[in-house]
Every structure is written in structure tokens, then in C-alpha cells.
Image (cartoon, rainbow, N blue to C red; front, side, top):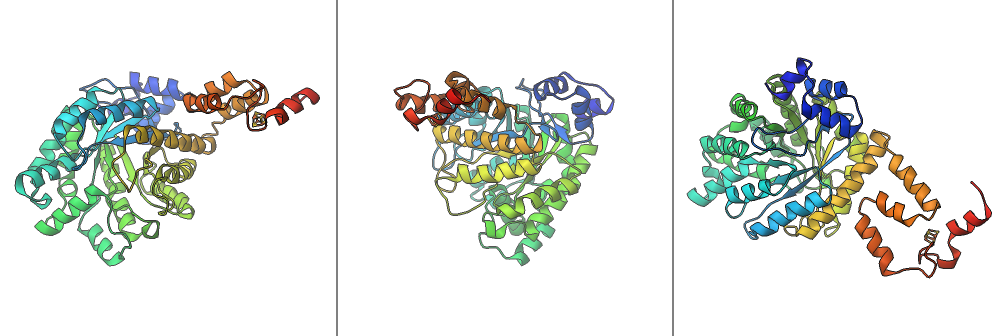
Length: 424
Ligand code: SF4
């Protein structure tokens, strides 16, 4: 019996209990969320993972995507990226390799982490078609479903599946006109395949078969966002909304069939459109967990896109997004290094916390930090910091002459002066 079925029957599973405990909510709150499709808990019958609930009323979760490209294939570096992502506090990991031995890379990465791992099975199907048959447009539909099942059996907990791209979506894309085309690899692969073969997207046309695989192997379905804008000037256009509508309808079908489901969102969005995106998405999907990719709120800061995405992610989370995908400083420029993966996760965790301060009113940590600062209690400040090591290192590099203060104000430390002369 799958998680949704158990929740519907009133059964609180061990996973639901764990989520309730870690989130500080009641077990029945989690059970009802799962039963009604507002919360998912990615699991796999093939491997044990650190349990992580995603959805309404729960802390905003952070995903770190890693993986090789055709230019850089370094298996040990990918394993190190997985390690750095976990060390930095990521909640989930997506393994998105497109270069090298994809099966072996996934096996090693999955074996190196306790986090739930996600994948995009169509990458492997299209990459293998390009390697064996000369072009991605020669991808075989049966291979796509076979690979999906193989990845499920390898212990993948959730999969981004590009179900919402059909000929209706492509018609919208064509008539819309875009400044920056299509930036989703999955979206580009599938669009090219459909147009070349003049065939409907098999993930849409054979959605029932896809659900059978998802259900049999207890994979959480993440409805992919292949039409997401790759520039703020393309945000919230008809192609994006068309795909969302299809995904929303399919998400209901998936949930009814007992498949845990997340719906993915864009991409690049200017600040004044973020809340509208979250509200519309939540409304049309009947409050399914919303997985926001970024979003990037400006296009002119390459080298700093972890910060650009953190602004968007904080606003998205505050408006109701449940799950955010990190962005690294090397986005748009190069494959990230393990250090950049670490930086990206920290930026996204800050954004998730800022969002939760609004969405869930989670501000206890900030209050404790205020008191620790007032008391000039440095040990406590480090303990409360999102990244204690970095905070300690900065202080250590420029130690003050008075250990109570810091070198910012030195002898004129406002906190020390006021503590001596005023009782709050
Ligand atoms: S020296 Fe200035 S910055 Fe440092 S703790 Fe005191 S008031 Fe804060």
C-alpha cells in the first residue's frame, strides 16, 4: 500500500511521524496533508533515506542539483558535490548528469548520500539516443519508460517528468514569441523530438503507463517545468501557463491514482510577478507542493546568481512555495565546483528561512540571535548561525583587542556602551 493510500485510511506511517516530529506539527496534520496531496514524503522501497516532508505548513526545503556535463565528467567531483550539498544542509539532491557513464555516476552518488535523490529520466534517454543513434530526436519511447523504471529501481526517490509539453503547449510557445527561447534541457529535448517525429510527447500521451511505474516503485512525481522562462522578460507567458494547466490537471490524476506529486515552477521571474505565480500555481493545482526553480529575479548578475535566486526564493517561499531549487554562483557560466555547490546551498537555505519567517512565522532563531548579540555572547551567536564555520573564520581573521567586541566599532562598541549604562 502506498503512502497516500495509508494516509487516506487514517494510518499514520513511521515517515509521517518523523516529519511531524521534525516540523513540530501534529501527526494528523501530516497524514491529512499526504492524503489530500498537499504534502509529499519522498521514499523508495530500494533504499533508506533521511525522511523529508515537502508541502503546506512545513519548513521550506532546499534542493541541490548536481551532475556532469558533456565537457566535464569527473565522478569523484560529483560525489564530492553530493557531500558538500549534504554538509551545507540541503534537504534533497538531484543527480542530473548528461556526460560519462550515467548509470554508474547515479549509482555512486545515490550510494554516497542519505538525502532523497531526484532525477530526470529523459536526460538519459535522450543522451543515449544521441550517443547510439546520432541525435536526440532518435530517442525511442520504449527506452524512455525502460530508463524511468531502471532509475526507480536504482533508488531514485523523486523524478522530474516533463508531462506538460504537448502540441497545445508548443502552439502557445510558437505564437508567444520569446526573447530567450527555451532554457530547460528537458523542454528542449522533448520539443525537438516532437517536432522532428511529428508525435505527441509520450510522457503526456502515455501518462497512465508512467503512473503505473511511479506507483509500483513508490517514486514521487515532480511535474517538470520545460517551458519555464530563461529571462525575466519572458516570465509568466502563455506557454508557461499552458504547461502549468496541463501539469495541474495531470497532478490531480496522479494523486487520485495514489502517486505523490509535486509541481515545478519557473525559472526567471521579476519580483513583482513572483507572488502571482505562486498564488496561481497553488490555486490551479489544488495546493500541491510547489517546487520553485530559483527563481532568478534579474538577468544581469552572472557570477552572483546564487544571490539573485535567493532573493526570488525568499519571496517565493514567503508567498507559499514549499520547495526551492538552489542556484550556484556559476549558473549561466559553467558547471559548478563542489565549493560553489556549498555556497549555493547556503544561499538557498538563507532564502528558505527568510520565507519561513513570513509563511510560518518561524522567528525563534532570530530572537535568540538578537539576545546573543545584545549579550555579546559570541559562542551562542556562532551556534545560532546558518554557517557557524564562516562566521567564526571571519571573526578569527580580524580579532579585536577587547574580546567582548568586534573590530567593526572596537572601543566604541554600541552594545557594550549601552549595556554599561542602560538596563533593558
Ligand atoms: S563592535 Fe560594533 S558591530 Fe561589533 S558587536 Fe559591538 S556594536 Fe556590534
